[in-house]
Length: 115
Length: 108
Image (cartoon, rainbow over all chains, first blue to last red; front, side):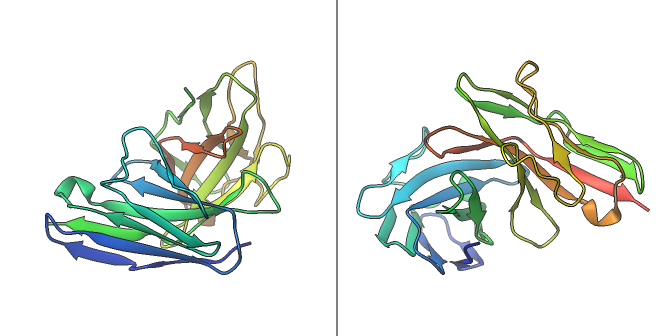
């Protein structure tokens, strides 16, 4: 299974600023995903990031607020822009196992608090 | 639209008792269904998927298309089973839709 790391593991940010979260995988993967888990809630998919193409955003999420980069097959970033307290969440990246379609492995998450 | 419902936010049982975590889904196509688990201070991890028909850590789950359910069962709960359990569904586009999660507490 893929090993996924995320940086930072947590951060406290001020309203109006931006934070970039990094996701690194130890093997090449085609599909990477970014999720949000708001306090006491389940996981919601933000976008799918494929290398060499623009990210595909889910309903309710827009590129201006959550720009994503996918420069290669082992790395992706998610930026949370112009943050407000409502953006306080855990942000997780995941990858699909190339040898087992539809199975996803998750990173440890980034806990973001916006004050 | 696809939707996953886990009706119980919390399920508390005693060690050795049977466990059933309920999951119902709505999806117009042929779903791929999963159970993910998150133990305390650990990352979310795949427990099992319906297509593999495996038993993992004593847990099984059967897809019932007639009832659109994918309940997770274990005949004898252990304290180490205490965790957050998420039922999830995916379509051909690889998008995972998660249920709200059920916290399982196994008391000694």
